[in-house]
Length: 528
Image (cartoon, rainbow, N blue to C red; front, side, top):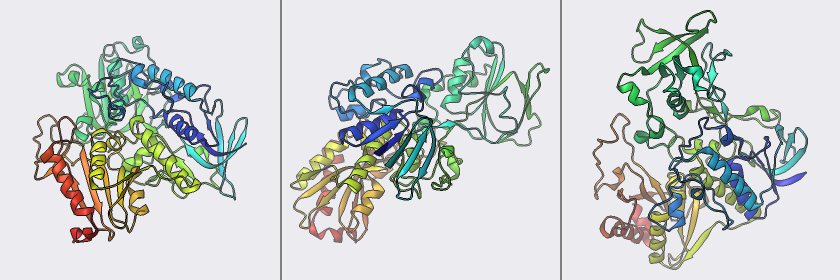
């Protein structure tokens, strides 16, 4: 069976890809290993509460603006399909609601998904196409989109794989098993705190451990770091109620069935490595240490060589992909979904539905532009005033640029006389630089200024002023003028508490002057 596109995995990313491919009348099929779509969210989070915002009321009727605060809806094309906000009234909804929503999306769009198709092998043939083998069938395709999600990952710790060590994906949900127990949870991320909170009214003592201090999302502005919805148990720590946070490396985990507390754990504390009190005993150990997205076992190593991203922060858990989401050295094979976050790791929302829904759409648009002659999505604008109006509209409503800041951008390209302009939407910044090389362009994205993480987020004194808007630590519009000689000029619009950029003096006037400088034939002088 031959297709132009095969998508492996029918989670949110695979479904988003199918929606885009269906809209383009593509010859495609989605393969799902389980008997039902969206297998990940049928199992995770274990305790079912999502940390993705479901904000039903924003004060706006603009659908694009509202998606800035609806983190669960896909970019659907059937007007009869309600957004996710119709499925739950909770700000942090249940994963069960997301499963029902995605089931309905698949049905309402008539997406071509084949379940019970566990992929055993993927190889690349001599003609450049891919052969995908499942338990029951063999498929070939020109373009392969990998949306398989992650599998549990564990650090190299002696004893961590002992069968009595519990893990996030299999730990019992029966609280009675943990009553009066002393528990060690490995990890300090959202899944670790999810387990800690669930067990806090049953366990006697809970410790959480990892080598590094907690990264709070309110400090880092990264949605994947520890969220406030997950950290209620920190009260128990600060108020000394049998809850502790340990900054330590675990040297060894040993287990004895005969001991009163069956686990003995040896620590090396990060801040006090010479501490002699470095061994503690526990009734239970639970590893909540994250996921790996490499999935090497699916691939024929003779024809496809996957490379792990070498950056230390990624710990070998992600494949190496390009800034346009293609697997390194494997043309026409693309990573979609959570893997996409590596392009701008721990910055924007690329690893989550509210981010990768846009990356997936942009990726498919780029493939169709490159291989099928489709034009890039754009508008024709007749003068600089229309350019300014469209930029301001996007600044104040766009969800794609807002969620995928620093990675996706809009691009304004003038004609040779700078009389008319073409406005392109939602392009990867690196793609735009290369595609429009030699032309003078204006790029719009969003950005945030860095802030040291040891500063308390709630006592931080803003330093950005109308004269220094580039120091804005909250998300704000960022314009780049790139000349035909490659030189750059930048304009930041000052952060705004209501995330609105419509003030005449603070926002509109600086943008007007910026465009006046750079959107004219003598623009090269502006860069010198």
